[in-house]
Length: 159
Length: 151
Image 1 (cartoon, chains in turn red, cyan):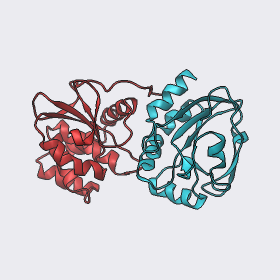
Image 2 (cartoon, each protein chain N blue to C red):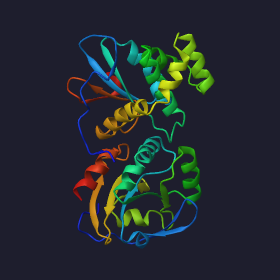
Image 3 (cartoon, rainbow over the protein chains, first blue to last red):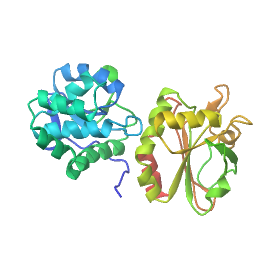
Image 4 (cartoon, rainbow over the protein chains, first blue to last red):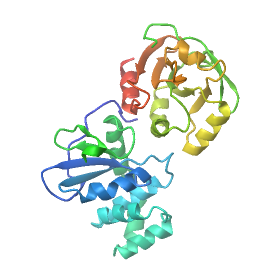
């Protein structure tokens, strides 16, 4: 079983999904099924500077979250990670598999590959790695934002 | 707040199904008591939801996690269902907050327990305890694993 003792937020690495560019880089641990994250997302994505998205699905609270995070990661395998994140946060009411296929099609994804990828065990492991790093960093609710340079938590009013 | 080395005060409380649960039932195993203010309040929801996500890792350390608040067991049942959690929730209902008081967790005047964690070892001794600075903050799951690694 994994070690979930306290550890600093891992610094940005090659696996991370980073939106935008600029000096001030924030890391957000977010749940794609969470309404607080959905309402924070527009502001976070629009701010100047870069933003790294890390997966933090709280499945017991939002049963569709694991599937949504897998869908985002699978879209990411075809270069459309943030398009899928934007799409899910913009409309959280239509998130069953047929809706996800529709979104994937609209984005121009190869559907067969999308389906294969989102069910792949190593993709689920990728999502789990982010989640565990959030637990170790003390994430206690979503969205949880950290400054990528200092690795300190950033309060909502400071985004 | 009760401290490591003290004997854990015994109790018998009803769980979400109305069944009696005693501290003695856990003899021979470690049990982590998570006192929290109340069902359905916003911060509580995240605390137990997050602990639920790492329940397998907690169980792998042979620790039973139990939540305790002053709510009735009817409220606990509804709260479990709403959150989609299966963590046992005990009702410290009558006398109100008696168990929370015994553990030094009860907030007089406010009428509920502060967010506190108490790890009881296999012999019924307190191995570790943690108290949140205020009821609005709760310890992340990492704090639990730190305690389980060192205790």
